[in-house]
Image 1 (cartoon, rainbow, N blue to C red):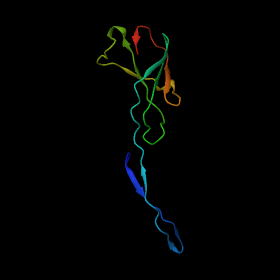
Image 2: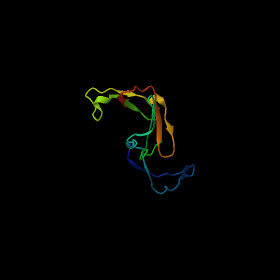
Image 3: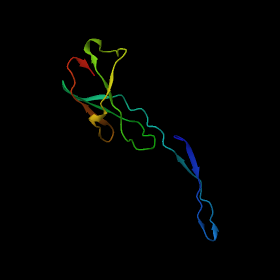
Length: 115
């Protein structure tokens, strides 16, 4: 079960018999990663934007990937998401992983929309 601490002991066995048990060791199983920080703009042009984000904890297991969603909001409604806003998966843009932050670039943006 994820996020659970388990305790173990080990004993060696040979044809003579059982050896003594080891000291108890505790291990915490991996848990889902923490929520990444809110995305921030790294660079932008009229047709593409590079965003970055950070992650607090990987939960004890390496991060294997990210899902990156983007919504286009007409400039006339900036500041609020409309009911029925369509979020598009732009994960295939790829993620560049630096030491403290991760970055991706979304292309083919349309002028007049806020992303």
